[in-house]
Each structure stands twice: as C-alpha cells, then as structure tokens.
Image (cartoon, rainbow, N blue to C red):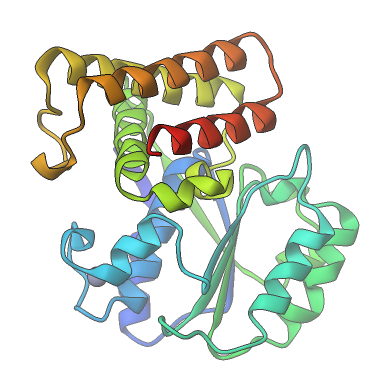
Length: 277
Ligand SMILES: [Zn+2]
C-alpha cells in the first residue's frame, strides 16, 4: 500500500503542464519507486493516451517496460558506486533529440552512491536543462546527496508501506517479466543489462531467481503458466523448460554461494541464449 506516492501527484501535475527537469526522489523502496517512475515516463510519452496495462497493446509502453528505448536510460551502481563515465554516457546520448518519445529520460538509482566526480560531471547538464530532457535521482537518503545536486532538483518523497505479501508479489511480477523476455526477446539476452537492469543486491537476486525456479516448476507440472500475462503461444517444450530451469538453478546456487554476481549473470544470459539455438 502506498503511503505518500508523490509520483501520482507528479503525473497529475504534468497533465497540467507543470514539470521540472530534474527530480531528487527519496524513497524507502528503490525498485517500487523505479516502477512508478516508469509509469510516469509511459504517461508522458504514450501515443495512445496511457491507461493501466497499456503495454498489452501499446508498443511504446511495452518498450519502456523492457528498457529497450534509446531515449530512456536507467543507471544502476557499477560495483559500489555510480561512475562518472555512466553519467557522461547519458549526456552524450542525450545530445540529440529523442526519436520515438517526446522526452529523453534518465533515472539514476541509488544516487547516494554517486562519487563526487560523478556528481560534478552532471552539474552543467542540470544547470542548463534542455526542453526535452527529464532526470530522476532516486535515493534512500537525500542527506547523502551533494548540495549542488540537491539545489538543482525538485525534491520529492515517495514512501511505501511494506505489507507482508508485497515482497512476494513484487518478485513474482519481475520473475514473469524476465521469463517473458527469455521466451520472446532472445536477442536481448546477448546483453545482461537488458536482462537485469534493476541493480539488485545479492539477497534480491536470490529472491528473484528463487521465484523463477518456482514458476518453471509450476510450468513443468501443469505444462502451462496459469494466471499470468504469458499467453499460449509462449508454450515451450518440457525439454526446453528443463534445460532453462537447470540454468536458473545453477545461477541461483552461484549467487547463494557468494559468487561474483556480474559473472554469474553474464553466464546466465549466454547459456539461456544457447537454449534457443
Ligand atoms: Zn501506451
């Protein structure tokens, strides 16, 4: 349940023609906040008058959901920090006008992990905002953000009340999303960044992969995925499902055994891709 979902207010304000070019969003749940910001991005860009579950029929909203538009960049920490290069890359990419969307939008997750030189590298960008660029800095603690960044952003709070089932539903949704990608977007698997852009920590990846294992097991038991957004055309053979389940389990074991997450995810996408050959 949402306590103070300022993103909804942001959406309302935007339709009144009021918006800032940069937001510092303080939250207690980066993943949920990212999801809500994506909703905002859909609302402001959707060519079909965005409605709930727009992605079922709307190509643009679908592409926003799977992080597959050049005009939307989500930055997650590279190791323990947000690196200067990651922010310079955004500025380079957004030096041209957006093609498929009205706005170029970047989202920096865990922006409290920006180094001082990263923060400085984006100052000028924030000082001279272009009409069609919107930036979000999501943080769990705005006090750890440099004053120079803070003063250039509209600061909003977006807090969520954590219910007992929230977590489970959250991972179920994401797990289905990734399984959907494994089935339908095999070319995306070349790059682990398309697969897992959320910047999870180890425990969160464990929960996600655990959920995927459960879903595959249900799939194998019932030979279809019940009650979700995968349709029948995605039915795969039991052989393929078993192969993919093994890869998911192997990755999960590696994550639980304290293995290098980046290497494990790289391997995961390469092996998943092979199952389609
Ligand atoms: Zn749409």
